[in-house]
Each structure stands twice: as structure tokens, then as C-alpha cells.
Amino acid sequence: MAGLRLGPLLRYVDWESGSRATVWVEATRPCTAEVRCADGAAGASPTFAVQGHHYALVVVTGLSPGSTTPYEVLLDGRRVWPPEDSRFPPSTITTPAAPQADEAGPVRVAFGSCRWAAPPAHGHDTSPGSRLRSSGGDPIGPDALDTLAASLAADPGAVRPDVLLLLGDQVYADETSPATQRRLAARRDLSEAPGAEVADYEEYTLLYDESWRDPDVRWLLSTVPSCMIFDDHDVVDDWNTSAAWVRDMRRTPWWHERIVSGLMSYWVYQHLGNLSPEALEADPVYAAVRAVPDGTEILRSHAAEADAEPARTRWSYRRVFGRVRLLMVDTRAARNLEEQQRSMLRDEEERWLREEMLSDPGAYDHLLIGTSLPWLLPPLIHEAETWNAALCRGGRGERWARIGEKVRRAGDLEHWAAFPESFRRLSELLGEAGRGPGAPATVCVLSGDVHHAYIAEPQWPGSVPDGAPTARVLQLTCSPVHNSVPGYIRTGFRFGWSRAGRWLGRALALHGRTGSPPLRWRKAGGPWFGNQLMTLTLHGRKAALTLVQARARPTGAQFETVLDRTLTSNE
Image (cartoon, rainbow, N blue to C red; front, side, top):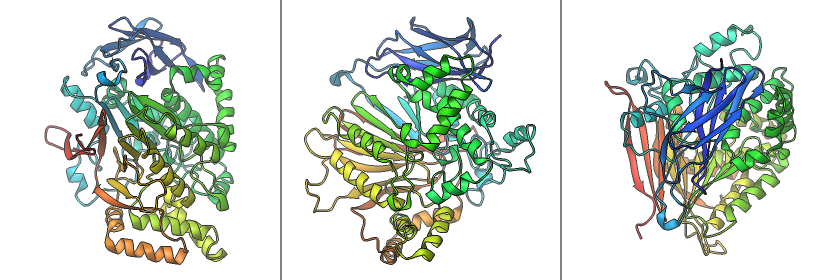
């Protein structure tokens, strides 16, 4: 008898027709997974197997546009969701109304990144007294996803996000909890490399099990659609920092299995659900895995090829929510790391991004670029990364290049600023997308990674050939969902925005001979520290931003609103 191991996760909801959705499940044995909705919509799919695990991504059809309908999951005809003893409201699928602009309601996009399912052994404390402020003994405070689930479950009339964007570090392969370490120790000797980090596909399944079996998060992901993209900790800290880093890792005996297993598990647990039914139908790997009794070797080959020849695999994707266009960009596997040609995105990936940003001007009111790594950083940090990139290229000689590589790895200097030409080209592309006939009202870069939240706004130079953008262009950074940042790093981020920090940044630029950035930017909000989520509310050409933080209260964790701001005029 098949049981439900993980899920259901509501992933893709079709905003063009309002009649389709996809639901992901993991079962305990081979079976047929079925989703039945209260309004008669339904879908079914046989499971596919990867390394003894059984999955299905069910395409649900026949949904009514503009409706919210409860659903249940059946395996071989037996209902397994919702559980009989569930304390949560029914899981539902909400579809948008007809896509005509004059009928469209607001689109609510919640986003964040960096979530420990449970604090790892030897994890960071956030600050003195953090244990006293924590909830339920958690030294890093309440989980923002748990808090969101609890607030939505407690109030059936609460406004839910239309989509939840998880911008990286959904699991931590290199920082495991004590509970996961006990499970790893039951399989192998943790005194041998990679020690308490995950080693293979089976151990990756333990991470997702720990993360998605959390009852609150499980219910939340069953009823709020989600889009995901990886960042470094989904594989290992500083993944693909430099060509030298890659060479060193490939000489490590355990690395090949880690990267192959990391990409395999990402494909199964995260990537598939990002895709539309049409994209799934056209995906040759998905078809091949489903066509055989066990798709392990097919998927292993695909993952190994994706690592060895990144240009042959695209993890980036596009989603459309009415008049809102979202481009989720792979800023990890798509890099060109050759020191003299370093770029955040390989040529073909950059062409894809450019085409998607600039196609059909006037077809959308808001353009969202999801990139796990921020485009705009505190000015001192930006200059430090650009300076470091110049050193590593050999701008100050071989000795400084060797020092630069050590500093790059020690300081996590790997954001857009560490790829100066990519930073320049992205800045120009964002400006181009935001001006001219049919320009959107806003162009927002959504990021995480840096374990705090802030708003940065570029200031375009007067020498821009075609003029400054008419759209409001913003960097919106929100992290972590559930993680920590030591006090000294908080101080560093604050200092990075200060006048003294800018002065020090200019000194680094002089030493590195890097010149001035192609534009300037100011801090328009923050920095804010805590477990948090941002939500964009987009309606017509209006945009508003909310930031909430999870706070421990005697009655349980609750959200505190720390920002509620209109981003556009009310014209």
C-alpha cells in the first residue's frame, strides 16, 4: 500500500488560462498519484523512480478561472491527503480570473531565501541574548515560513500570496542539523570526508525530508504556489566561486558524487515544479526518466553533463502572472569562470535573459528578475568585490593574484560586483528594459543570500545615451527566512553604506585601478536583520512593498510589519 512520504507541493498555476496547475508528491512505493478537486478538476500520473524513491508531478486540468477549490491527493485510489487528523484548513488551488487587464486583480509575490529547517550543529548565534528571544528553544528565532503558515491557517480570510519565490539555499548540504547528522551516522562513518555534510542522493533526500515534512511548511507549500532556484548551500558554500575553486574541488574525492547528487536532487525536488505543463511535455530528460522502471542512471548522466558542460543545461526560467513577468536566473551553474573572461552568465544564458527582458514591450506592467545574489550591494562591499576581481585577474601582479584568490574565498566575494563586466551589462540591460515606449512601471531585482534585507535604488548618470529609465528600478533583497548572521557581520553591512565605507571603497578602487561603477545607487531602506519575508503587491501599474519579520510571542510566533511602502505613484 503506497503512502505519502512528502508533499503535496502546489507548484505551477497557469495564469494564462486559469485552468491548470501542477502538484508534486513523493510516495513510498510505485503507484498512480491522483489529485481531485472539489469542483471536479482532476489529474493523475504514475510515479517515476530515482534511486529507490518514487515521485509524481500531477498536471491538474479543468480548474475554473477565478476560483479557490479544495483538493485531495490519492495514491492508487486511496486518499492520503489531507490527513484525517489535520489541524490545518483544506489545501486549495487558487486560479486567477480571466486574463483581461481590466478584470485582473492584484498579484502578490512573497519572496526570501536561506532557510535552515533546523539550526545546524555549531551554528551561529545571531546576537547576544538571541536564545532569550527565540521561540520554542530555537536559538535563531522563529521560522518565517512557519509563521506565515500559522498566520494563514488561523485566519481563513487572510490574504495569501499568489506565489512564493524561494531564492536559494532551500537546503544546506554543508551545514546539517544534529538530527540529520544522526541519520547520516547510521549510514557511514562521519570521521571520513565529507563528514557531517551530505555525501550522495540518498542523503539529500534526508534534507528535503527534514525541511518539507515540517507540518506548517508542508501545509503552506500545499496551498501557496512556489517558484525556486538554487544558491550555493544547495550544493556547498561558495559553489563555483572561481576556476581555481573548481579545480581544487574536482581533486577532492567526494566532490563528484556531491555535485552530481546535488543537481539530481534539485532537478527532482525543485526544478521540475518550476516548469509549465508544455515545458514538461517537451523535456527529453523528464520523458526518459518516466519511460523506464528506474531513471537513476539517466538522471545521473544528465547531472554529470550539466556540471561538466553547463551550456547544455538551462536552469533559468520564465513565469508570467497576468501583467507581471518573472525571470528566475541561475547565477551559480551558468557562470563562466575563466579568470580573464569571468562572467556571471555564459553568453547563451545572457542572450536568453536579454531576449526575455526586452521581448514584447508593453506586454507587462512589472518586470521581476529573481537572482539569488544581489545586483546592488552596500558600496564598500561592491568596491571590495570589484577590487578583488581586478587582483585575481593579475592587475597588480601574480603575488596579489594569489592573495586575491584567498581573500575571494574567505570573504565570499562572488556577487555581481565580483564579475565587473556582468555587473555593467546587467545595469545597462535593466536601464534599457525600463525606458522607451511600453516600459513597465517597475523593474525589480529580487535577491537573497546576504542574511539581511534592504532596498537599493540606482541613480542613472546624465550621460546615458537614451536617457534614464522611466520605470522605477530597484534592488529588493530579503534574507534569511530562517538563519542567522553574527553581530560583527551586521556591523560590517551597516558600515558598508556609510560615508566612511564609501571612502574606503574608493580607496580600494584606486588600488585595484578599477575606475568608477557605471552608475551610483543609494540605500532606500534598511538594513533589516531577522527572519523575514518581503511581499510585492502589484496591481495595474501600481506597486507596494511589505516587509514582515517573525517575532517570538508568549502565544507563539507572529509577524511584525517593519515596512509598508508604496513604490509607485497613484496616478
